[in-house]
Length: 528
Image 1 (cartoon, rainbow, N blue to C red):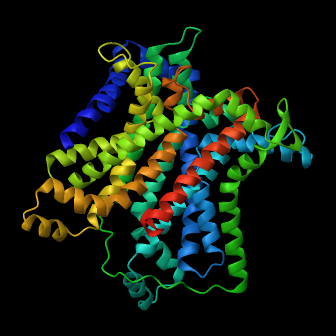
Image 2 (cartoon, rainbow, N blue to C red):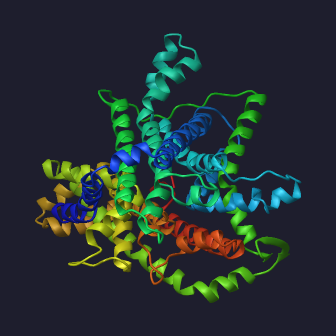
């Protein structure tokens, strides 16, 4: 199984990335032009600054919110947590669309509040949307880490006279650093690869994904070589971020011995009010796009403007024009999710129970899959497999392959975590009774780690539903998905239809999440 997955990732991840690398390095003078022309330098600088700003902003909002909800008797914790989860149930470009609906030039709030001359467009709007969407990831990952911190270490610091603020900075947060660094890496790589948000509200803001898209697919004489250079620059920045994360965590131990939960500290009336207000403001603003999309989907439109009248016209128009697209999206995402679930169960088991060179190679490929930008993968897949012998360009298969490559790591990591929590004695007992390894895995191991793997598959499926950065490079008219249609509807100012499609994505996600939560229980779904 490990060899099968390694072969798959070598063919559809490593080889395409190698084609991008070779394509950008082989052309003479390509990198000199890329680094000297102001057009490309500006895109490189914009991408780097946006990703750094989004990472810093998400950490600045998410980490304090996690500390407040885990270390203090803050009211409305469950509501704050629910809002944070809801903020992650749609892709970033849906948030961009929602803020256009609110604060665009013809936005609801722009008109109602008389904000003449103000709009969400531009670099500031792009950064705001990125921060609000991704701070939920930081909050959830940091919160989970803080709940696992050994309270005996904090109590030891307290017994030595360390004040609360110093314990937080020198003991608590350092012990949660793996989660904080991981969430920072996730935000950086996600925003670095974000195609939809800068395209929708950047108003000419150049970023590397946009440059790669324009150069690769331009009908006005684009340059494939320059597209590969932009793609390689994206990959190098992502690898640099991974190196920084590894450097931050190297040579340190973060394990504890106690399984007790840390007791929450009391807050005064003013502290409780201010803390709850901060939490509701951050989580509410992050989840606001979901509400905006749902409400605007039932508002009638006249051109790009909402009339204020209520009706189901947007849904009728969506169904009449795009029912086939919806079915196609469910087929692609369902196929990818099922593939990732089966592979995740087996590979997660291999990583934990069969350590060795093979497992380390597989783990390294999964790390690369996790950080490679969708634009890079899209360009690489076309260069590698757009021609015979496979000729995948323009097919639905190339989209499914891209989705599996980009999101399989989520399912594998979740399944591996389930295996780590499973005592090997259960399998050994079955084997000692003469049951072969295959039936033992299927009847015992797979059943017990299935909830964890399904949790990861749910996260992967949600990401696949809204995947735009790789889809935009690979789709044709016959393979367009819901995310592409939302993007196109917003570009043509068809905001009502875009809202109906966005509501469909949110509704599908909530439905599947609710079914799994009822079937598996809240604890089995982890942070989700």
